[in-house]
Image (tube, rainbow, N blue to C red; front, top):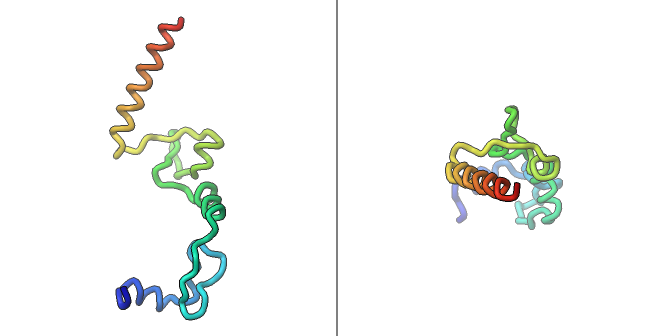
Length: 102
């Protein structure tokens, strides 16, 4: 929608806006395709810490790669009560299964 505040702000920022891209915005503000999917995934998963991935030992948020590749244990975010109850249920099922096997 031309003339929106966002459009005006982006136009004022001009060629200095790079965002996820390596190259500045083309002259005239032509829309370009996004970064290649592999490049985007690489940056998203390895360089960008995610606010919901807080280590159990405390500290700054970590990246998805830290969690899924390096095995960093994370806290379940407070707003995910359903995940906490699901984890408790899973822990009970696993404990019952271990008791049945031994």
